[in-house]
Amino acid sequence: MTGNKISPKNIESVKSIPDKIILHDARFKVHIGITKNEQKNSQEISMDIELYTNIKNAAITDSITRTINYEEVHTLIKNYVETHKHKLIETIAENIATLLLQQFPCLQVRIIIKKPQALQHKNVTYCAVDITRIHH
Image 1 (tube, one colour):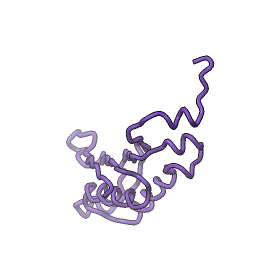
Image 2 (tube, rainbow, N blue to C red):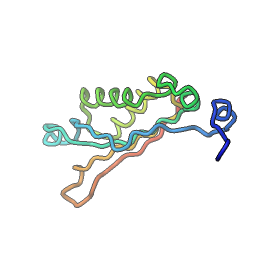
Image 3 (cartoon, rainbow, N blue to C red):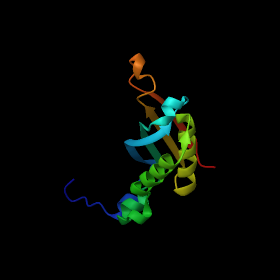
Image 4 (cartoon, helix red, strand yellow):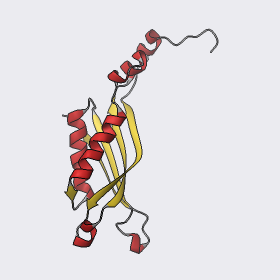
């Protein structure tokens, strides 16, 4: 690529499909479960979070204010899961998807939540839910 400089004008001319910002394997301690024994102690869950958004303006300007700040995403999720108790990971996934779509400029979110302890006694590595929600 000798002689070919990348400039904002070059970037603007490139067509793109929705980009993704991804938080992979974010781990949180939560109070979750069906039985009283499960609910008594916190359990670790892990999440993969994908936020579909256009990052082209951030790339052109090299500015955090033009994109979704993943530290803010993590903080929102952490604050939610640490202050709410649920029986199902399905409920956590649905509520987090709704929060993310309300708080950040994303077209779509995908949330995968893994609960390693769910069937540990049956030699299952983890149970999980995987949801995708679109902004209306």
